Amino acid sequence: MAAETRGGNSEAAWAARLARGPQFTMPLGHGPGLALEGFWRELFAGAPLGARVLEIGCGGGHVSLWAAEAGRGLRIVASDLHAHPEGVHRHAAISFVGGARAEALPFASGSFDLVVSNFAIEYGRPEAAYAELIRVLAPQGSAALILHSGDSTVTANSRVALEAFARFEATGIPERLRRAAPLRADHLSRRKMLKEALRLGAEAPGQPPAASYLALAERLLEGDASARRDLEALDDDVALRLSLYRDQLRVALDRPALQSICGRFSAQGFDVKVSDFMCVYDNAPPGKVGWMLLLARTSPV
Image 1 (cartoon, rainbow, N blue to C red):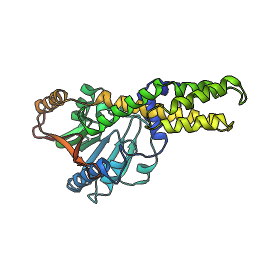
Image 2: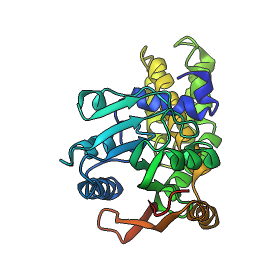
Image 3: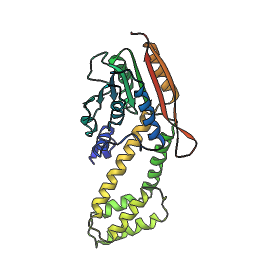
Image 4: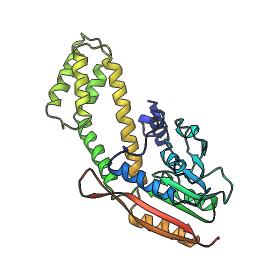
Protein backbone atom coordinates (compact mmCIF):
# COMPACT_ATOMS: atom_id res chain seq x y z
CA MET A 1 0.00 0.00 0.00
CA ALA A 2 1.21 3.51 -0.77
CA ALA A 3 2.67 5.46 2.12
CA GLU A 4 -0.05 8.10 1.87
CA THR A 5 -2.71 5.43 2.37
CA ARG A 6 -1.04 4.14 5.52
CA GLY A 7 -0.80 7.72 6.72
CA GLY A 8 -4.55 8.24 6.49
CA ASN A 9 -5.17 9.71 3.02
CA SER A 10 -8.82 8.79 2.55
CA GLU A 11 -8.89 9.16 -1.24
CA ALA A 12 -5.94 6.78 -1.56
CA ALA A 13 -7.64 4.33 0.79
CA TRP A 14 -10.86 4.29 -1.25
CA ALA A 15 -8.89 3.87 -4.47
CA ALA A 16 -7.07 0.90 -2.93
CA ARG A 17 -10.38 -0.64 -1.86
CA LEU A 18 -11.84 -0.33 -5.37
CA ALA A 19 -8.70 -1.86 -6.83
CA ARG A 20 -9.56 -5.06 -4.96
CA GLY A 21 -12.76 -5.53 -6.94
CA PRO A 22 -16.39 -4.40 -7.07
CA GLN A 23 -17.29 -4.51 -3.38
CA PHE A 24 -20.58 -3.16 -2.06
CA THR A 25 -20.73 -0.94 1.03
CA MET A 26 -21.25 -4.01 3.21
CA PRO A 27 -21.60 -7.76 2.61
CA LEU A 28 -24.57 -8.65 0.43
CA GLY A 29 -27.07 -11.40 1.07
CA HIS A 30 -27.85 -10.75 4.73
CA GLY A 31 -28.30 -7.98 7.29
CA PRO A 32 -27.69 -4.40 6.13
CA GLY A 33 -26.48 -5.42 2.68
CA LEU A 34 -29.68 -7.33 1.99
CA ALA A 35 -31.83 -4.48 3.33
CA LEU A 36 -30.04 -1.90 1.19
CA GLU A 37 -30.35 -4.00 -1.96
CA GLY A 38 -34.07 -4.40 -1.31
CA PHE A 39 -34.51 -0.65 -0.80
CA TRP A 40 -32.75 0.30 -4.04
CA ARG A 41 -34.47 -2.35 -6.15
CA GLU A 42 -37.87 -1.23 -4.88
CA LEU A 43 -37.05 2.43 -5.53
CA PHE A 44 -36.00 1.79 -9.14
CA ALA A 45 -39.01 -0.46 -9.77
CA GLY A 46 -41.19 2.58 -9.13
CA ALA A 47 -39.11 5.08 -11.14
CA PRO A 48 -40.70 6.78 -14.18
CA LEU A 49 -40.14 4.95 -17.45
CA GLY A 50 -37.01 6.16 -19.22
CA ALA A 51 -35.95 8.43 -16.33
CA ARG A 52 -32.45 9.89 -16.39
CA VAL A 53 -30.67 8.59 -13.30
CA LEU A 54 -27.38 9.75 -11.73
CA GLU A 55 -25.58 7.78 -9.05
CA ILE A 56 -23.08 9.89 -7.12
CA GLY A 57 -20.14 7.89 -5.81
CA CYS A 58 -21.02 4.57 -7.43
CA GLY A 59 -18.00 2.67 -6.07
CA GLY A 60 -18.33 -0.93 -7.25
CA GLY A 61 -21.44 -0.03 -9.27
CA HIS A 62 -24.01 -2.26 -7.56
CA VAL A 63 -26.72 0.41 -7.18
CA SER A 64 -26.47 1.45 -10.82
CA LEU A 65 -26.66 -2.18 -11.91
CA TRP A 66 -29.80 -2.67 -9.82
CA ALA A 67 -31.27 0.38 -11.57
CA ALA A 68 -30.45 -1.12 -14.95
CA GLU A 69 -32.08 -4.41 -13.94
CA ALA A 70 -35.36 -2.70 -12.96
CA GLY A 71 -36.83 -3.04 -16.44
CA ARG A 72 -37.88 0.62 -16.62
CA GLY A 73 -35.67 1.72 -19.50
CA LEU A 74 -33.70 3.98 -17.16
CA ARG A 75 -30.82 5.97 -18.64
CA ILE A 76 -28.14 5.71 -15.98
CA VAL A 77 -24.93 7.60 -15.34
CA ALA A 78 -22.71 5.99 -12.71
CA SER A 79 -20.19 8.57 -11.46
CA ASP A 80 -17.28 8.23 -9.07
CA LEU A 81 -14.15 10.09 -8.05
CA HIS A 82 -12.08 7.01 -8.88
CA ALA A 83 -11.78 4.65 -11.79
CA HIS A 84 -13.60 1.52 -10.75
CA PRO A 85 -14.19 -2.13 -11.71
CA GLU A 86 -15.64 -3.11 -15.03
CA GLY A 87 -19.14 -4.14 -13.92
CA VAL A 88 -21.09 -1.09 -15.07
CA HIS A 89 -19.09 -0.74 -18.28
CA ARG A 90 -20.61 -3.96 -19.55
CA HIS A 91 -24.22 -2.75 -19.30
CA ALA A 92 -25.67 -0.87 -22.26
CA ALA A 93 -27.97 1.24 -20.06
CA ILE A 94 -25.10 2.62 -17.93
CA SER A 95 -22.54 5.27 -18.75
CA PHE A 96 -19.61 5.52 -16.34
CA VAL A 97 -17.97 8.89 -15.60
CA GLY A 98 -14.77 8.78 -13.56
CA GLY A 99 -13.01 11.70 -11.92
CA ALA A 100 -16.39 13.13 -10.85
CA ARG A 101 -16.28 14.85 -7.49
CA ALA A 102 -19.60 15.22 -5.70
CA GLU A 103 -18.84 18.90 -5.10
CA ALA A 104 -18.06 19.59 -8.80
CA LEU A 105 -20.21 17.30 -10.93
CA PRO A 106 -19.32 17.42 -14.65
CA PHE A 107 -22.96 17.52 -15.82
CA ALA A 108 -25.23 20.25 -17.15
CA SER A 109 -27.88 21.79 -14.90
CA GLY A 110 -31.20 19.93 -14.88
CA SER A 111 -29.68 16.79 -16.45
CA PHE A 112 -31.30 14.13 -14.25
CA ASP A 113 -34.76 13.12 -13.10
CA LEU A 114 -33.47 11.02 -10.22
CA VAL A 115 -30.21 11.36 -8.24
CA VAL A 116 -29.15 8.61 -5.84
CA SER A 117 -26.27 8.06 -3.45
CA ASN A 118 -25.51 5.10 -1.19
CA PHE A 119 -23.11 6.16 1.61
CA ALA A 120 -21.18 8.39 -0.80
CA ILE A 121 -22.23 12.02 -1.18
CA GLU A 122 -21.37 12.83 2.44
CA TYR A 123 -17.69 12.07 1.73
CA GLY A 124 -17.41 15.20 -0.43
CA ARG A 125 -17.46 18.77 0.84
CA PRO A 126 -21.07 18.79 2.09
CA GLU A 127 -22.20 22.34 1.24
CA ALA A 128 -20.84 22.16 -2.29
CA ALA A 129 -21.97 18.54 -2.83
CA TYR A 130 -25.60 19.22 -1.92
CA ALA A 131 -25.61 22.38 -4.02
CA GLU A 132 -24.42 20.32 -6.99
CA LEU A 133 -27.15 17.74 -6.42
CA ILE A 134 -29.73 20.53 -6.55
CA ARG A 135 -28.14 22.00 -9.69
CA VAL A 136 -28.14 18.81 -11.78
CA LEU A 137 -31.66 17.77 -10.76
CA ALA A 138 -34.42 18.53 -13.26
CA PRO A 139 -37.57 20.48 -12.34
CA GLN A 140 -39.91 18.08 -10.50
CA GLY A 141 -36.97 15.71 -10.08
CA SER A 142 -36.28 13.61 -6.97
CA ALA A 143 -33.37 12.18 -5.01
CA ALA A 144 -32.76 9.30 -2.61
CA LEU A 145 -29.79 9.34 -0.26
CA ILE A 146 -28.55 6.78 2.26
CA LEU A 147 -26.19 8.57 4.66
CA HIS A 148 -23.95 7.48 7.51
CA SER A 149 -25.37 8.16 10.96
CA GLY A 150 -23.34 8.69 14.10
CA ASP A 151 -25.76 6.53 16.10
CA SER A 152 -25.99 3.54 13.74
CA THR A 153 -24.87 -0.02 14.37
CA VAL A 154 -22.57 0.38 11.35
CA THR A 155 -20.61 3.25 12.88
CA ALA A 156 -20.70 1.61 16.32
CA ASN A 157 -18.98 -1.44 14.81
CA SER A 158 -16.35 0.80 13.23
CA ARG A 159 -15.59 2.39 16.60
CA VAL A 160 -15.27 -1.03 18.22
CA ALA A 161 -12.88 -2.20 15.50
CA LEU A 162 -10.68 0.89 15.83
CA GLU A 163 -10.56 0.61 19.61
CA ALA A 164 -9.80 -3.12 19.49
CA PHE A 165 -6.87 -2.70 17.14
CA ALA A 166 -5.54 0.25 19.13
CA ARG A 167 -5.46 -1.97 22.21
CA PHE A 168 -3.72 -4.73 20.26
CA GLU A 169 -1.19 -2.31 18.75
CA ALA A 170 -0.44 -1.02 22.26
CA THR A 171 0.79 -4.49 23.25
CA GLY A 172 3.77 -3.95 20.95
CA ILE A 173 3.24 -7.24 19.12
CA PRO A 174 2.90 -5.85 15.55
CA GLU A 175 5.91 -3.56 16.04
CA ARG A 176 8.08 -6.46 17.25
CA LEU A 177 7.17 -8.41 14.11
CA ARG A 178 7.99 -5.45 11.87
CA ARG A 179 11.39 -4.98 13.50
CA ALA A 180 12.20 -8.68 13.49
CA ALA A 181 11.12 -9.55 9.95
CA PRO A 182 14.04 -7.89 8.04
CA LEU A 183 16.70 -9.58 10.22
CA ARG A 184 18.39 -12.89 9.38
CA ALA A 185 16.44 -15.96 10.42
CA ASP A 186 19.17 -16.96 12.89
CA HIS A 187 19.65 -13.45 14.34
CA LEU A 188 19.40 -13.60 18.14
CA SER A 189 17.53 -10.28 18.37
CA ARG A 190 15.01 -11.51 15.82
CA ARG A 191 14.30 -14.67 17.79
CA LYS A 192 14.08 -12.74 21.05
CA MET A 193 11.55 -10.24 19.61
CA LEU A 194 9.42 -12.98 18.08
CA LYS A 195 9.36 -15.04 21.27
CA GLU A 196 8.43 -11.94 23.22
CA ALA A 197 5.62 -11.22 20.73
CA LEU A 198 4.25 -14.73 21.21
CA ARG A 199 4.49 -14.43 24.99
CA LEU A 200 2.58 -11.17 24.88
CA GLY A 201 0.10 -12.77 22.49
CA ALA A 202 -1.03 -15.14 25.18
CA GLU A 203 -2.29 -12.10 27.10
CA ALA A 204 -3.53 -10.06 24.11
CA PRO A 205 -7.21 -9.62 23.16
CA GLY A 206 -8.34 -12.52 21.01
CA GLN A 207 -10.04 -10.32 18.41
CA PRO A 208 -8.98 -10.13 14.76
CA PRO A 209 -6.43 -9.41 13.47
CA ALA A 210 -4.48 -10.53 16.57
CA ALA A 211 -4.57 -14.18 15.51
CA SER A 212 -3.18 -13.33 12.07
CA TYR A 213 -0.21 -11.44 13.53
CA LEU A 214 0.54 -14.24 16.00
CA ALA A 215 0.38 -16.86 13.25
CA LEU A 216 2.94 -14.82 11.32
CA ALA A 217 5.15 -14.59 14.41
CA GLU A 218 5.21 -18.41 14.51
CA ARG A 219 6.10 -18.59 10.81
CA LEU A 220 8.85 -15.99 11.16
CA LEU A 221 10.30 -17.88 14.11
CA GLU A 222 10.34 -21.05 12.00
CA GLY A 223 12.23 -19.19 9.26
CA ASP A 224 9.39 -19.18 6.70
CA ALA A 225 10.79 -17.09 3.82
CA SER A 226 7.36 -15.89 2.69
CA ALA A 227 6.23 -14.67 6.12
CA ARG A 228 7.84 -11.24 5.74
CA ARG A 229 5.90 -10.60 2.54
CA ASP A 230 2.70 -11.79 4.19
CA LEU A 231 3.33 -9.51 7.16
CA GLU A 232 3.58 -6.51 4.83
CA ALA A 233 0.34 -7.57 3.12
CA LEU A 234 -1.41 -7.92 6.50
CA ASP A 235 -0.17 -4.49 7.59
CA ASP A 236 -1.51 -3.01 4.35
CA ASP A 237 -4.88 -4.70 4.77
CA VAL A 238 -5.25 -3.54 8.36
CA ALA A 239 -4.17 0.02 7.48
CA LEU A 240 -6.75 0.14 4.69
CA ARG A 241 -9.57 -1.07 6.91
CA LEU A 242 -8.71 1.32 9.73
CA SER A 243 -8.48 4.25 7.30
CA LEU A 244 -11.94 3.48 5.92
CA TYR A 245 -13.39 3.14 9.44
CA ARG A 246 -11.95 6.52 10.42
CA ASP A 247 -13.27 8.15 7.26
CA GLN A 248 -16.72 6.69 7.87
CA LEU A 249 -16.82 8.11 11.39
CA ARG A 250 -15.59 11.47 10.10
CA VAL A 251 -18.55 11.90 7.75
CA ALA A 252 -21.27 10.31 9.92
CA LEU A 253 -24.08 12.78 10.61
CA ASP A 254 -25.69 13.44 13.97
CA ARG A 255 -29.31 14.60 14.10
CA PRO A 256 -28.58 18.38 14.22
CA ALA A 257 -26.33 18.07 11.15
CA LEU A 258 -29.01 16.12 9.31
CA GLN A 259 -31.66 18.68 10.25
CA SER A 260 -29.44 21.41 8.83
CA ILE A 261 -29.20 19.52 5.52
CA CYS A 262 -32.96 18.99 5.45
CA GLY A 263 -33.51 22.71 6.06
CA ARG A 264 -31.27 23.53 3.13
CA PHE A 265 -33.28 21.33 0.78
CA SER A 266 -36.61 22.63 2.11
CA ALA A 267 -35.48 26.19 1.43
CA GLN A 268 -34.73 25.17 -2.17
CA GLY A 269 -38.28 23.98 -2.84
CA PHE A 270 -38.01 20.30 -1.90
CA ASP A 271 -40.41 18.10 -0.02
CA VAL A 272 -38.10 16.31 2.44
CA LYS A 273 -38.71 12.97 4.12
CA VAL A 274 -36.12 11.66 6.55
CA SER A 275 -36.12 8.47 8.60
CA ASP A 276 -33.88 5.92 10.26
CA PHE A 277 -32.93 3.14 7.86
CA MET A 278 -33.39 -0.02 9.92
CA CYS A 279 -32.78 -3.70 9.33
CA VAL A 280 -32.63 -6.99 11.19
CA TYR A 281 -29.04 -8.05 11.87
CA ASP A 282 -28.97 -11.83 11.54
CA ASN A 283 -32.01 -12.52 13.74
CA ALA A 284 -30.97 -9.91 16.32
CA PRO A 285 -33.26 -6.99 17.18
CA PRO A 286 -33.53 -4.37 14.39
CA GLY A 287 -30.55 -2.05 14.17
CA LYS A 288 -30.01 1.28 12.51
CA VAL A 289 -27.97 1.24 9.30
CA GLY A 290 -28.00 4.98 8.61
CA TRP A 291 -30.24 7.86 7.57
CA MET A 292 -32.65 7.64 4.63
CA LEU A 293 -33.33 10.99 2.96
CA LEU A 294 -35.96 11.23 0.20
CA LEU A 295 -36.26 14.49 -1.72
CA ALA A 296 -38.89 15.59 -4.23
CA ARG A 297 -38.60 18.95 -5.96
CA THR A 298 -42.05 20.53 -5.77
CA SER A 299 -41.24 24.04 -6.97
CA PRO A 300 -38.34 25.08 -9.25
CA VAL A 301 -36.11 27.79 -7.76
